[in-house]
Image 1 (tube, rainbow, N blue to C red):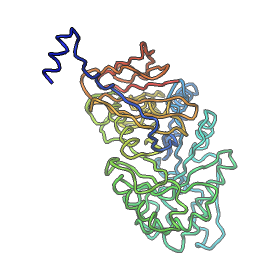
Image 2: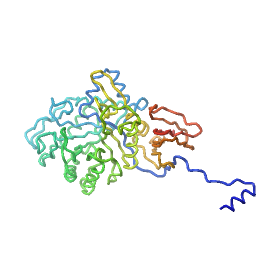
Image 3: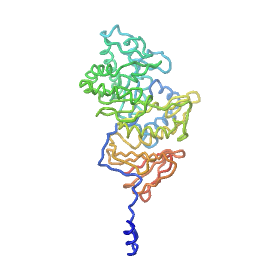
Image 4: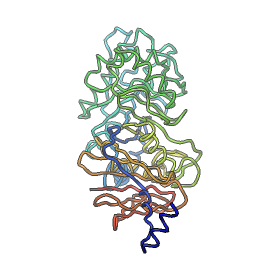
Length: 440
């Protein structure tokens, strides 16, 4: 090799060195999962907090959640199906059948107030912004359907009440249909492997698969989702049990899991769609920071969303919660006494994905030369491309050769989706920053 360089020098030529690889490489021939959307839940009467604010602030919060120019442009709303009787403490949801009708074979005695803890109001507002995905999920059956006689503290569904419970869930979707809201996805259990002091109900993976076979034929007009396990690794057992049963597999359209007990590290064992359907990080205070090392800042959320999309190949990502009060890790904090609200960087971390990656988008191949860069890329139904780059390092990285006509949106300590025109097809990926590049 040395003699070759000497020969080149004698000829008066300069040696040619291979060009370094680009900071980010896209391969649109590699196609991964299709995206259903990104969303929030306001279950457990959190919408009632929102209604304590003046109308102008209510609209500002709705814009922050659902508007594609002012906020996150979220496309999924997760609703909580109530199980507790009216008059329960603040954190409990009102049931559509609070009293035992007289047994599992007795005619049901459903009640509907058209409000559902203000969930109907927010669902209608979301629909006006363009949301079309409404995921109704039950934390528990009514207590009289369970072996512990209580909607709280775990307990299991009594076998003789399976069909009545399935009918109860479908009735809920029909009440929403009368309000002009189509429930698209229906879940019958939340964290079936966790006993909580609030509404909760246990299912083993095998019991969940058995109930799916009861619910599926009754809930033909919605997609059945299962099983919202407490952790992603734990969810794999529920998915495996359903996949192993041909009849259960027929009815479950979306496999769901949470990430409290374990984070997303791999896909669930199914060819169906999967959602990370609930999570927020642990924390002991309200925190609006982007990157403070707390583990419940905006940077943490951006990294978690990236991992769910790339490691888990999820089609949906639903955060818990959109807004709450006190030392919450929700996206927003509402002070129902002072009649004010506060916005965290967690909102903008999620918004960097949800505003630009639209339902029907497909994740495509993307890689980075620098291991400090977490990269994912998507092609939307309208042909636009979205490249998300989370620089986890402490040094800026220059990306040359950005494809097409692009705009970069920067989210970090000082910016919240701040637009930055891409000049000369070059983007500076700032350290500890999420850069969203949209190519039109």
